[in-house]
Length: 399
Length: 81
Image (cartoon, rainbow over all chains, first blue to last red):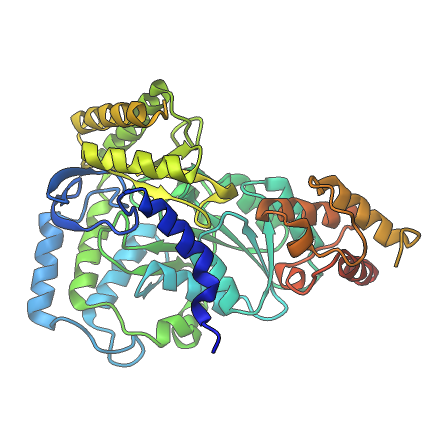
């Protein structure tokens, strides 16, 4: 019998080699207690969290928690059913109403995760003989959405407007076209030139989907994302988002003004063939989304944090993913996986948690220490974070 | 198929531009096993071929193409359409 697990041997060996040096496993951290959006207890130690997607710090918001508790009491712990059967409660509709109000759009569809939102929308709307043109650095959920469907997939070089335009022009006449972009690319924290890309897409007769997972709540005047900030949100056909970042719970969604949008509820398999979100989750999401509509002060403070951390890390001598801070993600580029893992561990011992990101999640084989800021990080915490980076960087020889 | 084949000759020229390891290239040379390009190199190479012949080679098609000769055949078919 051939062992189906043989294909994982190279990864198993790489992991064993890394861990045999006595290093803490970067992909096995357990948080014993979570004190706030920015502090947890890990291995008995108070740790500042700089590797969550809790951008707007909504996870401990008293109104959000109260809404969840009430829903748990009144509607129970789960729906035990699909959205199209017994899994749509008033809370799910209220959550979709909150999304429509937040984005100023006609339709909203809530999925059980953000991953499923991409999987469902992309695989369903682009059929055989249609073309999906996407940025090469797209998130795994976008690629998996492409793989689940059967459209022709055409990637273009990251954020390259000319490369996108050339491919769009060469698509056979009459074929359906979907351009898939992200507002913020989560590995390096850079944003897309959506103004130009959306214009080029429309000029070539393509529909446009933008994943704004990492910008919702933070970027744009109303927190609607990069498309709003660059003034092209009205030309975007579909916005995909998640509740597991700024909203502070779990779930995914698509909002759109397409007049036939509602039919997706019957034909989108990752929406139909899975259980809907628990009532407490949609209640926390709806409350959080409505509060994010009035989050201008928090947005301003988060920008201050991002600028301060970026400037501070640069001054310490680290190489960063972007020349200027473009989002709440600051990526520190490490020379290799071994150094990255050593630096990650040194930071954890200092009392700081960041994400260690490695291929295949990262572009161009890079190893990154990815820092994501929260609106609840105080300016003093950012000072503390910079001091820890300085100490860990010197201890590991990174700077 | 040899260098006298016009399309193969142009494809081979493009392969040479990215063939940093100096692997000898024939129509039977395999992209994955012989040339061992990373994903970014593949992307740039495919873009180069697309620009050279003004065609589009989707990832679905790329999955079916293993050798330089097969690529030349695919290009011939696409350029004709």
